[in-house]
Image (cartoon, rainbow, N blue to C red):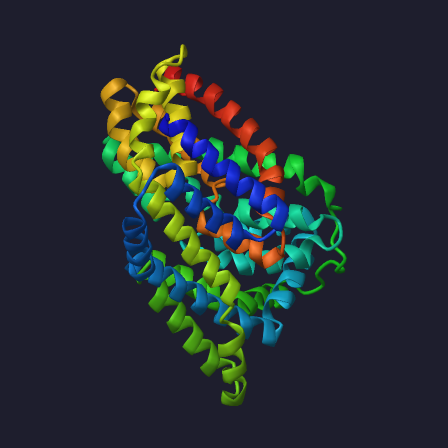
Length: 402
């Protein structure tokens, strides 16, 4: 049977299980089993791939980073830092809508999946009852990923730029209008449901409120600075910030054991591991490599074929994989594609990651808000369709000016 049909059946099984059980772990497990059965992988081979995924450094590192950030989050919760910072930001700007998306955008400069949990807390505090739980989850996840669509601190962006041979500055500048589109679409669909004025009274001492924001978020800002300015890896950066927070805020040692235990969120960490296993097993089937041949028969322009290839390839195997495989193919087929083609393909892969079950961040935000993956995807799809439609129009505009 055609690999494309088989992978659709796999995602169909996952969707059914997710809808019936509401548990991400069961849905991903069903996807793993379905992939093994539908693609006829030998049991021994499947077990070997599972073991390799679990002990791979990328998986272990993700679990450690997620645990470290959760522990840092527990300390910030204990001290009430995030709540005070959010209220001070509300008072400073006087615009609840801006503050609800601004904090996740800023925290998105930190290239770590675990930070979406902190974004979730901030959005919940700021949005109150004006958004339902699925909408809060969307806002937290969507705006946290804005930076990931264009910043060359993310691996997928670096891969795309390097393999295409395009200018980094040229790509970043060309992506900025689409970044504005991202922010605007989230506002149009969800943020405008919020009242403009926050519940907190306007600031009477802007300097004091600004200090409150900095004092509440300084551990996270320090992590971002260590990573972007000093090129420190995420895990040691979070560890440094955590140790400094304990020392500066004089967190009693007696409070640490309880936070160490509560930071170990078993279901959340299990979901992350299962997503890694599923991604690796699907990748092993070779279905992503077969996508170009599947789409080549479509009676549409080449750039649209590659756009579809990047979207579905990213849903299945992630942005890094489709960039690695697809960028050389795209520029071999469209050698004069330049920056416009790179922007279009990146937009397709980026938006695909916002609905992909292999995206670790989505698993984290679903668990954090205690919702289903389907609930989050339903809130994302209208935004994704509009974004990709605008990306096609923008591609044609770029080809006229570049």
